[in-house]
Image 1 (cartoon, rainbow, N blue to C red):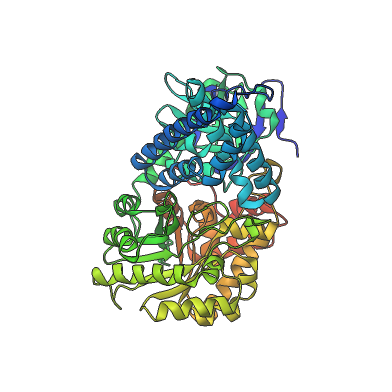
Image 2 (spheres, one colour):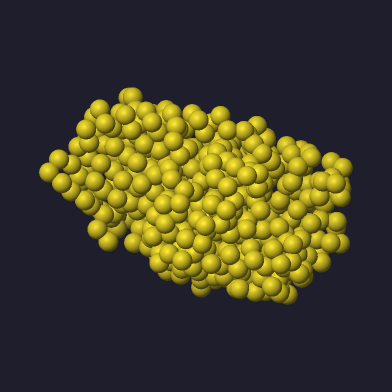
Length: 569
C-alpha cells in the first residue's frame, strides 16, 4: 500500500486514523533509546551478585516511578502505567536477568539478553502477546538508563505546541503526555486498538498510527498539518489554510463538549452511553461526565502487582469503590481477564506455547474454579453492602466465552449469588453460536478489540496489518449483526465495550445494527452522543447496511460518510 501522495507543493503521508482532530505545529521526535551494549565484557565471579543487585535497584526504581505516575493518572493511562510497572517486577524477567549476571554478564547486557528472549517469545505468540513487545523494549531501555545513571528515555523537553513523532511510542510515554504541548501523536508502527491508541483516545489528542517507514522523511522542526480524522500528515501546507482548519476543528470540539445526555438519535431512539473503568478512581472521574453507568469494569487491573490472590474482603473493598460511584446506575463488572497481555502472578498459567490463544479469561476460572467463586462472592458482598438489589442489579460478565456450556456454567454461579449474568462476545465462535449461548444469559457485551483480531487473524500491533485490525471490517460488522439479531430475537441486551464504541461514526453504524449500549473511555462519550443526536435511527440502519455490504474497512467508512457527513461546528 502506498502511504505517500505528492504534488509540486507538498507531501502527504497516510496512516491509520485513531483520534479525530486537526493540528498544525512543529514536528518533534521522541528521545532516542539508549545505545544497547554488546556481548563480550565479563564480570569477576566475586562481583556477580553485586551486579545483579545493581539491576534490582535500578528495576525497583523504574517500577516505583511508573507506579507513582499510575497513581496520579486515571483511566487507561493509569491502567497501562501500572501494567508496565508490573512487567518490571515480573519474576520471570528478573530470573532471566539473574541467570545472565550469574553467567558473568554486566547488568546492562544481562537486561538486553533477558528482554530479547522474552521479545522473541511474545512475537512468536502473536496477537495481544505481541502488543507487549513495545512495553518490553520500554522497560529494557528505562532499566538500562537507570543502571548507567543516564536520563530516562522518552518524551523530549519542548517549548510551545508540537506534534510528537515516534517509531513506536510506548504506552507509558503516551500516558505521561501533557496535551497542552504535545497536541498530536504520529507513529510509524502500532495499530488502532493498541494500548497507545486507547490512551490517545482517553486523552482526546489527535492520533495517527501505522504510517510506515516514510514517516522518517519528516525532520524535526518542520511544520506539519495532522488530520486525525483522515489519517493524513501534510508537509508544506499553506500556513493560513492550516490555521483555518485547526480553528474549525477546535470549534467543533467545543461544540461537542457542550453536549449533554442522555444519548439518543434525533428521533428519540435511546442508546445507553457507559464508561470503561479499571478502579474506583476512574469510576469517580467517569461519574463527573455524561456516562450513565459503567459498561466495563476491568477487575484484573486492580491486582496486576499482587503476588497472591486478594481475599474476598480485600476484593470487596475494591469493588465497593467502583459501585459507590454509580449507586443507582448500571455497573457491569468483568470477571478476571488475566493471562496473555495481562499476566497476574496468582492466576496466569506458565509456559504456554501460544498464550494469546491459551488459558486466559474464563478459561483460567475453568482451571481454577475457586478463583472465580471467590471473586463472585466478593462482588456479591460489595453489592449487598451497598444495598444494591433487584431495582439496581449488579451485572457481571465473563471474558473469552466460546461455548454455550461455558455460558451456562458461568450463569449458574452468578445466579446462586443474585448477580445478573452476561458474557463477552469476543471469540468469533461466540457470535456464530449466539443462538445457543444467549438463552443462558441476561446480556452480552461485544469486545470489538479481540473480536476483530481473532476474526481477521491479524496481530493488532503489526503496522502492515493495521488495515485488517480495524473494527470497520465488514466481516467483523457481520459478526456483530449476527449477535444483535439474536439479541433482538431473545430480547437480550447487546452492548459494545471495545474501542469501536469510541468512534462517533462507527457508533451510528453499531446503533443501526441493533446495539443497545456503548461503553468507552469517558472522555470519548460526548463526541459519540453529539454525533448520534445529529441522525435518526433510519439513517443509522442505512449506514449499517452500507458498511455491511462494503468490500473492506476503508470502503465501509467511505460508504457511511456518504450517508452521514462530517459534523459542522
